[in-house]
Image (cartoon, rainbow, N blue to C red; front, side, top):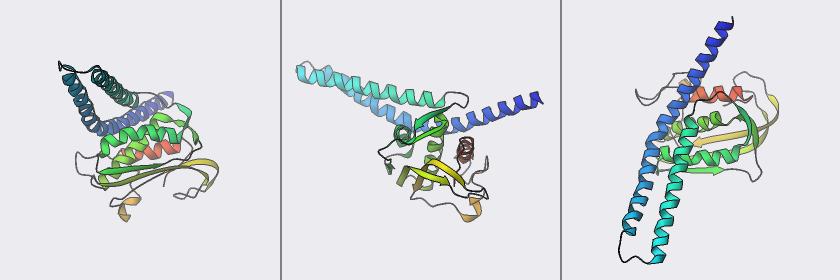
Length: 232
């Protein structure tokens, strides 16, 4: 019985890592594009510094630009490395609004400039007890689906706020208590009625071969349930 439990735990860990790496794969193309833009700024500043007739004021300005841009590049790679790391589930108390603000920086890299991202976050912190890495992964997975549903152009809106209780969802009775709701909406094509009941199934996808594995929303619902929450 113990061996079976160990095997199940290993399988769950492997699935979680596969789900996370799916999101990392989506991110890398956008990160590479952003990184190239940052390198262009650094190269340009270095070329300007080589000019013989450079004033002291401009020299300082170009050096500052190199330093600031290198810091932004380090933050970008640091976020990606922290996001991709293998770790067991580790619930912690964090502010949903603050976490959304951080992860939206990464979401921008995968949605592109033709998708406008609007975040609505209350002034007061919205604290939850959950695994922050899994929370960030869930936001990225849903943002990927939104991007694909909009075919790369539209508006993605993420709203965070406190709510009282969880309503009845999929035959589960309502749950009383204080919760934080994260609402994600887009201007895309929506989900066809015949597929709504299947969207959370692992490996179910309506995307073309090579465009998605069907692990994104299964990660989202798994995270929500493990965090004493739910999704609709």
